[in-house]
Image (cartoon, rainbow, N blue to C red; front, side):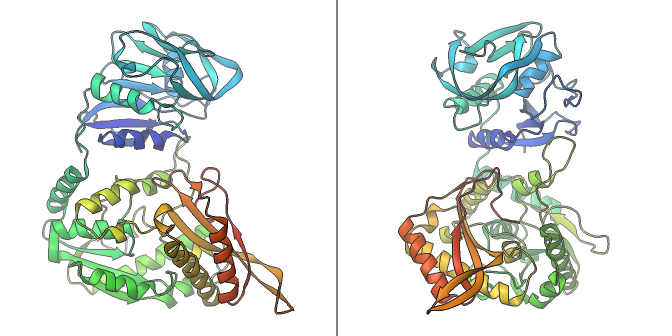
Length: 509
């Protein structure tokens, strides 16, 4: 991708939101750790320095090497970035008397500043810092203040460097997107050419050049990511794409056959492989979530190794990896600490002689859907909720047995079918049920029961990086709970998860 924006990650929970806001402007951007970014910056048109949980005054403060950036590329320094430039360039940063966190309003904006074009005085911004800039760096000019923060924004004369102590990327900064647009488009002159159509054209050309006449094997899951990846690759290499849909025994009820039927009319070469027992064997007695993910990942690799050897001269393994998978799986000092591993991120074992191709690696989930729509994929398929690669194994807390899988499949079907029949499915980003490792006392037919507890989870989100629980109607929850308890043998209690991400994750494991 040309005309990139480079975002340096210092560990802020908001870094991914910066990328989302930039992408919404049809501008391509990439996130890199502050201490490990490309040495060749020739394709970048601007750099954004993100926030951080660290203090610039601390001994463990992240120190980026800006020698190839400062004064050479336009810079927007956000929060920690603004304090870093001040603290190490002749200014002063000190601890605030009170933590500056939450809503604030701009009380002063310097006139005739391009950065604030279209932004009215008193515009609301979001603060999140315990330090504050007390003196500006050398050659800096104040651009904006709030009632409590004198140097809310500044620029450095003699270079295209702007700095703000608030977060323009969060929803609560009402003109945040406008400020980002002013900086990137009007000041840095970054072209707004990152559209679904442009992505398809570029990635298809890239795949053709990269793969040539080689054969590619792709694991389909029935989900949005792998489907869009398959259609893109099919557009690029046609008959040289071999799709495999593996039944790992952890899919939704009846999903294996329904997904195969779904792909039948899409012109894809798909083979179904039932490897359920292989996965059950790999998971026998495993209770740790990370070990489950690794066991499933290894089993997938084993299955693909066997299947790929049945395809003569296959060279590549394609995966539906998307950008949040990549971000959450990066682990460096400070930023982007690993929350959980992803089964489709990382290298392959030496014995598997396949190269990896990931056409969606740089896209967020909503961008994948827009690309899919551009490719003409059925809207019903594109609207399907995300489903974890490890399947129901990470929605069954504790060890995995066939009995538990069947119970959860039945519960999940009642829940998902209920959402669809009540017209709620498309209003939810992701929904599912979790089988808890506890039994509870109940009464059925005047008899005491001691059976399983299930939790229902429904969240709204844009890309899975953050998520809020959905306020489903009480009447719906009552009906679904009643149906689950009456129709699914072995369950006598249903609860609803009302936690958001962060601090919780969408999946329980």
